Image (tube, rainbow, N blue to C red; front, side, top):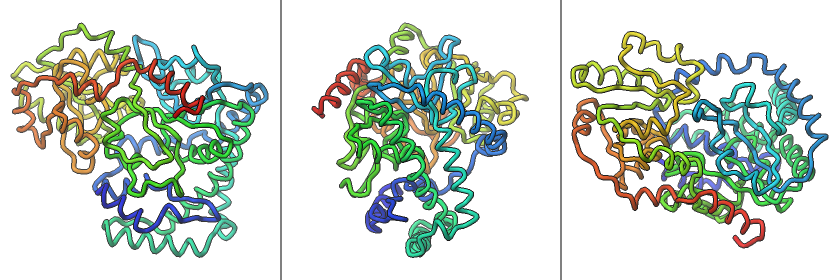
Length: 472
């Protein structure tokens, strides 16, 4: 399905399309691609619960954040590095750390200004750190969004609206996926609003800070696309840090590789050379293998642990009850075999744990791994690790453990490289999984080294130095 989607967007010339003189396809291609590629994907239970709570007190938070950002904006100074922070944290030894920032130790080598563009999963205490947000731009964007709904004529491009309606018909004819034409048009109008509002904000921010380089974690966040255009105009290179699975991912694969109509960072720091062979990036975005410093530190810390042969850990991929039910079915079939069965919720699920997984209340023998438990201690301490689509299985490769992939047709392409390289086994049902548990597996260390390049911190610092000097 990915290949078909890439050919479709190339054949339709979608990167050349403009709405109100703004190239829009780059902004929406991932959301459209997910609808086409993951045909059977449904909203998870946690998605639904989050939507119910998302907008509570949001206006108050924006107003408060706006005042805070105005105060911080007056104090901004020139810095070497502008870092756009997702605020995604993990608990390590009872403390909250940001694996996408703290372990690179950029602050030891550069003066840094952080910009928080999302709430992430942090608590109030952790967010009270130095850094400016995007509340002012978000507030202006929200106002214009509501105006575009009330007075659509002011924001409309009638000719392109007609093209988009026809595009939705073509998507249905080729992929059998229904996309609301009016919602699609509104999404494109939102792109224009983002381009105007956030573009102006980023221009002010970059000129105020005059960074030598900009770093982002997740390049396809919609609020960041105007950043790349603005940074390019101001001749500031942008680097994305790999933050998860990029193999066969629609955000990192293209059929048409010219830079025309592409709005992307200039560089992608990947975990290792293994990942570079599973992506097809336009000429305007260069992959550089550097590694993962967080994983480096955890590998050293837990390398001496011997995994327990009878412990099985199932990792939630936010599928919800379907995945939990599999764990329960396996437990009931194998209750007499002495397995210690654990379930690790996704980090985004912990605030809603009781609402999501009350199904486990009847099975207290199944251990729910607490949020405070170090993931790498779990990976090193259990012999068996199970997920459907998770970077966890790639991370588990650094230890002498076994990895299993729960087959789901809409997601298998992302995890397939790990299976191809011989570091994971796939199963379709409980019976197949039980058989795999009895098989022996030898880890190919050379394959692990391809996935996770060592000395990530030193590699990244060298690469950033070359980028600043214009050597890359």
